[in-house]
Structures are given as structure tokens and as C-alpha cells.
Amino acid sequence: MSLGVLNNISAIYAENNLNQTQAGLQNTLTQLSSGSRINSGADDAAGLSLANGLGANSAALTQSSTNAAEGVGLLQVADGALSQVTNLLNRAVTLATEASNGTLNAAQDSAANSEFQSILDEISNIGSTTTYNGQQVFGSAAGFQIFTGDGTKGGGFADTITLAALSSATVGDSTGSAGLTYTSGAGAATSTLTYAPVAANSVNLGADNLTSAANAQTALNDVYKSVQDVAAERGYTGAQINTLNAVSNVESTEQENVVSAQNSIQATDYASATSNLSKYEILSQTGISALAQANSTEQLVTKLLQ
Image 1 (cartoon, rainbow, N blue to C red):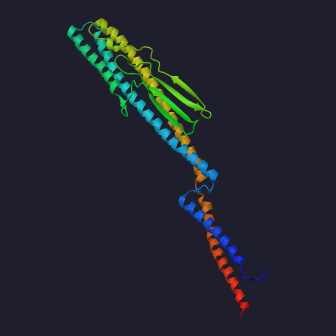
Image 2 (cartoon, rainbow, N blue to C red; image 1 turned 180 degrees about the vertical axis):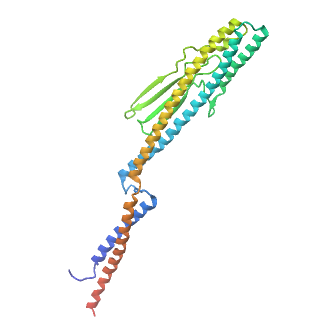
Image 3 (cartoon, helix red, strand yellow; image 1 turned 30 degrees about the vertical axis):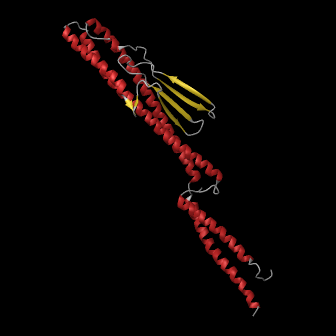
């Protein structure tokens, strides 16, 4: 190998290696400081795409669990209202049973009927004033759609809950329903499951009164049927609460697993990163020393000119 100064090949080699070392050191420091192994598309393009997709899934699943919990809140409001209706109907049973006895005089029948009519008015009042987030719970034509999913086209579920109107004329009405619509495959097809509470005894209590023993006996029979209807509607409501609680639990579990998968792809492996940090720091020091040595070697040429 000839001795010359036109190109310092050793210095070029040392410089290139030092630049690569510095780039590796910078990348390692970025991983350590950010906690993420992938900080740009250049680090791992495929991994970044997958991690970002899983991040979107996680966000959707987190909100879906909240959506299901809000649906449970709505149904619990409805169940609480129906519980109060049951209490009122139990009092109406007492009044109708008392008025059916025939030992009451006209004034006493009138007093019993007055309270009975007040009970019916209160049932109608509960039906018209029970709201959730400013929306009427009973009798909403559109119902309430509880949406859950993981953000993908084929992973969406819509649970549509409809609670029938509640009044003295429709106590525990059977027209309430729930429809669960879900997409299958890539989202090209949808299926809907619809079911309703069984309440075949629906009667109009508004037409009843306790003005006579005969009327009271008719009212008593109607009120008893209404108690059964309200129980059926509460059973339907409770089933929907259990369904949404199960959905919320599934979404939470799925979100946990998605986050775990995202973490395994994206999170910095600190054991490996700290090992690389030590390696690059040593290479950086030796690279600088090698570059300095390569530059000083060229000075030997001046000895020939003396």
C-alpha cells in the first residue's frame, strides 16, 4: 500500500463507522426516552401499521364498554320506575280488595276510588316523566341503540332497546322489544335478532273504578293482570341489563388483550436497549479515537520532506 495524502482512506472508513454508530446511539436513546421501539415508519413500517391498528381497536373497545355501561344505566332507570309502579299497583290491589267487600258505604267507596284514581295518575306521571339524559325512557318511537364494537367493519354490534309507553292505559305493555344487529364476515351481511317480553294480559286500568263492589272486583282482576305484566317487563329489562353487562365484560377483556398485543409490538425492550446503549457508547469512543489516529497517521508524510 502506497503512502499518500490525496485521500485518507483510513479516516474515511473510521468516519463512516462513527456516523453509523452515532445513528444507532441516537435511535437507542430515542427508544429509551420514549418507551417505544417504533418511533417512525423507518424503524418498522409493518410493525407501526399493526400497532396503530391495535391502538384504534383499543380506543373503540374502551368506549364500547362505556356505551354498554350507559345502556345498563338506562335500563336500571326503567327498572327503578317499574319497581315504583309495582308498589303503586300493590296499593291498588289493597284498595280494590277493600272496596270489593260490600260493607263500605258510598262515601267510603268514593274515598277508596279517589285514591285508586290518584294511583293511576301517578303511574301515568311516572311513564311521562322518567327520563335518561334528557330523553324519555318509556314510549320512545326510535328506541335506544347501544352500539359496541372494535372499530372494524365486521366487528360492530347494535342493541336496540324499545320500552313501550307507560300509562294507566298501558301498564307493562308487551310492545317493548330489543333487537341485536351485528355484521358478519367483512361486514357484507347483517343479522338481526328481535325478542320482546311476554305480557299477554295488557289491560286499560284507566277504565276501572271502585265506585261499587262489582266495579271494584273487576278492577281487582285488571290490577292483578297488570302486576303480572309489569313483572314480565321487568324480567325483560333485567335480561337486557345482564346482556349489556356481559357485552361490557367481553369488550373489557378484548381491550386488555389488544393492548397487550400492541405493547409486545411497540414497547421498548429495555434490557436490549440498555445493552445497545452500552455497545454504542463504547463504539463511539473507540470510533473517535480511531478517526483521530487515522488523521495523525497522515502526518508521517512530512517526515519524508525533512
